[in-house]
Image (cartoon, rainbow, N blue to C red; front, top):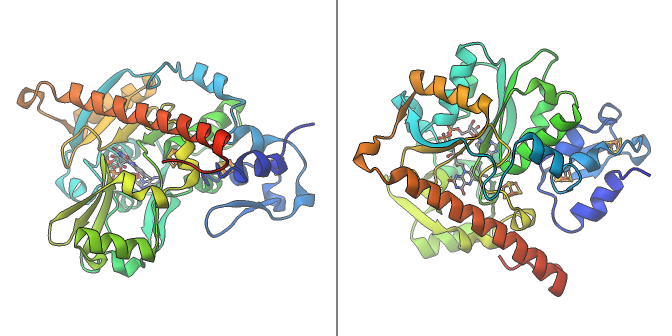
Amino acid sequence: MKKTFFHLIQDVQKKGECNHCGGCVTFCSAMNYGALGLDDHGKPFYKDIDKCNECGLCYIICPQIKELDEEIKRNAQWESPLGHVISFAVTRAKDPDLVGKATDGGVVTAILNHLFDTRRIDGAIVSMSTPHGRIPWLARTSEEIMDSAGSHFGSSHGIYRFARDYATFSPSVKALGETRAMDRIAFVGTPCQINTIRKMQALGIVPSDVIPFCFGLFCSGNYSFQDKLFSELEAKYQFTYVDVIKINIKEDFIFSLASGKQVHIPVAELTGVKRVACKFCRDFSAEYADISFGGLGADHGWTTSIIRTPVGREVFRDALEKVLVSFRFEDNPKYITQAEEKIFKASRQKKEMSDQNHMARKTKGIRVIQ
Ligand SMILES: Cc1cc2nc3c(=O)[nH]c(=O)nc-3n(C[C@H](O)[C@H](O)[C@H](O)COP(=O)(O)OP(=O)(O)OC[C@H]3O[C@@H](n4cnc5c(N)ncnc54)[C@H](O)[C@@H]3O)c2cc1C
Ligand code: SF4
Ligand code: SF4
Ligand code: SF4
């Protein structure tokens, strides 16, 4: 008997390991009949169990289920400890307006726009900020891609306009439902989402065939901020949320204030609001992406990239000629090695944390230690 969503509930949801990627709902073969739904928090549920045809697809593509792991590792030429790596780079967008609004160096958006302008994609699955966090969407114009850059909230109002209940996650896989046949779409997402896409591609499931480019974001975890936590952070770090215009995650969680000041909060202090599934996750650097991006290892306003596949190398090389500038390594020849070391460390720590939490759960029940 094939395992179905019923088994996902037992094996993933009940253990707190569902990362709300939305993959099971998006690719459910009875999607059009309404077998599954997503609640307001992105949690999948049986909308109508009688519509489930027990095909088993949702179970096998879930990133928390290991069945296809060996196959996607083989396809990606995965190797320990960081996945397949062709090269590292630290760059930023040539366009200063883009750098001003981007999360780090605007490299993701610059590459997406370049692919769009050179007609290699018809759109990109990205994420836009809303009052209660980021929501995924399929951007189909250059302007829409630009509008999705970064994590700014608008300097006139600050984060308060968006309520004090904010989550960093965006169930981007869900937006794949908006694609059309013949589309060529770039997908931007967290490592777990890239994992879901690679599983679908390994199985040849439509519409994963419309994605020629998978761009991964480094990810230490997803965090849901609620009112109480904000009050505690404000008191401890002497800022007010009204002044927050941008959030970012590098080594620390960073709130940028309208005054230009930055508040750095160690991620360990946010463990309480980290999604439980993230405490078991082993992938920091999006090991199955064509290119992975993060701020870690780069100075403020620059993006670190890991080029992993021939497709990624071709895209990055072309973008570097046209829309990106490279960090001047003559200013600091050790720079790229330092960036690599930081990524290795973050990656190792995430795997260790996952192992420790699995062990803690085995020996002490569901409690997780970090
Ligand atoms: C949840 C999360 C955790 C992260 N943790 C780390 C970390 O610990 N260390 C680190 O170095 N970097 C982390 N990053 C990556 C970092 O924040 C930047 O996205 C990355 O450096 C690219 O910067 P950029 O200026 O080149 O991107 P930009 O040009 O600003 O483009 C960013 C792209 O990512 C999309 N996006 C934004 N938020 C999400 C989301 N939640 N889900 C899917 N797509 C999204 C945007 O729509 C946009 O297309 C994290 C990102 C996310 C979303
Ligand atoms: S129809 Fe298939 S994919 Fe949908 S819930 Fe049932 S087993 Fe999962
Ligand atoms: S992790 Fe993703 S695919 Fe797995 S149950 Fe949760 S939403 Fe569904
Ligand atoms: S920590 Fe892992 S499970 Fe959580 S959002 Fe990031 S990649 Fe997904």
